[in-house]
Length: 246
Image 1: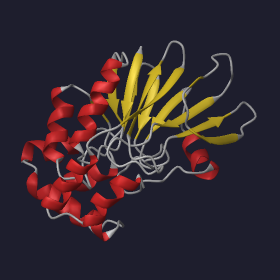
Image 2 (image 1 turned 135 degrees about the vertical axis):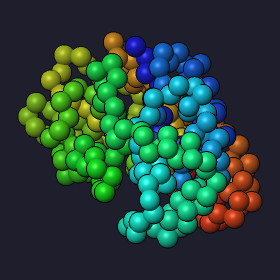
Image 3 (image 1 turned 30 degrees about the horizontal axis):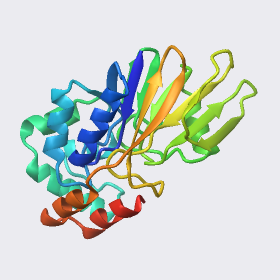
C-alpha cells in the first residue's frame, strides 16, 4: 500500500490542490491528512470541502480543535486566536461539526497517525516533538513500527532503536531496512505553512511493503495565497512568512 501523507494545510487551498495532485501522480493508493486543515489561511471552507470530497481520512489538529469547540482562553499566539475566531465566523455548522468529529489518532494499514504526540490526546495539550525528550514521551505509547505526526511544520525523522536510544534527523527520502528492530516517528512537514526555510509545500509517499519514504516538495502560487490572506483582513505576517518558509 502506498500511502500519501499530508499535514498542516492551514486553509491554504492553492497548496493543498497541487500537493494532492502530486501525491496522485506519484502513485498513492490512499491519502491521509494528519490535521490542521484550518487556521492561518483564508480558505478554510474550500480546504474542508476538498478533504471531504476526496474522501481523505484525517485526524484532528489543534487548530481544527480550537475552531470546532466552544471558545476558550487557549494558550496560543494572539494572531492565531484572531484567525480562529475569523475561521469560526466563515464556516457553516456542517463544517464545524465535521471538524469536531475528527479523531485524535488514526491507524491505517498498520501505520499510526497523530497530529502532535501520543503523549496527549485530549485536546488540552499539544506537545511539539522537536527533540529526543519530547519524542521519548511519544515512543512510550507507540506500539507499531511506523508513526507519522505533524504540528511542527518541519520534516523530521526520529528513530527509537533496540537499545532504547533515540536519534533525530532532518527527513530525507530513504528506504528503511525491514530487518531492523526499531520504531520510527516521521513528520512530512507542512502543506500550507512550511517552517524549514523552504517555501514549497511538503508531502510524503510511504510504501508499507518496501518501507520506502519519498519526501515530495511542491511549488505553488504563494503570491495568490498572500493576497487572499491580506484581502480577508487577516494578520499580514501570516502572508509574509509564506515567502520565507518559516
